[in-house]
Length: 318
Image (cartoon, rainbow, N blue to C red):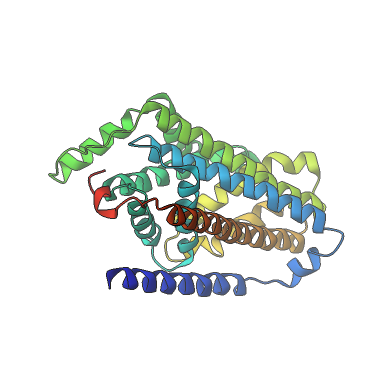
């Protein structure tokens, strides 16, 4: 009975995500984006989609570095399945859906709740700080003299890379503050540094998709390069901090349009911003579906071979 309920809840989440993604896509002004996505621009858009997908994979590796830095390694296929499924539910209202999905799916591969929750929190810090670090490339052009706050926001990434042990120290202090036992899990220095490096490169790679779209729309390649490469991470991070809208919907696009207007006419800046949203959303959905299909195929093979799945009950000790 419990298994049936979990399956039904999984189906309900899938339906809710599909509705949320459709609502997010519907809320955009597609007129100029559709004009932009004509035959002559399709090759650049396709290349931008591949580049963005590479950035997503690097982001998954950053998350996996944290997971594997606190316990037994999780296979790459399982890591990708958990990460990309968790990424999809960010389109639902609320901020804890990703954590709930990560915990549930982590239990299925032998990763305990405490371990998965810790990774969720640390990964947010890694994403925010490295996104600001990437944003330093765009800050001079986009913000001028007001860009100093981006440097301050990026400092945690540099500090954590130099002193990764601060993560464990901060976790212990938080537990002491809430009068809880010190965490049993400790992140290795290598795991923290690897996660920071993967995520920083992820932002820079993903930023190139925005540059490709901007150049296709007529932006000067040299003048727009640093602006676009750094802008994407900066806009996504700021958008994610606006908790009242799922995935920074509208906020990210507003930041992109304002900055891209420095190198493009305003209508084309809007077209690029909306196309970027479409590329990013379809990339996330496509990656999640592809990885899920591979994981399901692997499960069927293991079932035919008589190999038992990791027990969720055993994962609570992880």
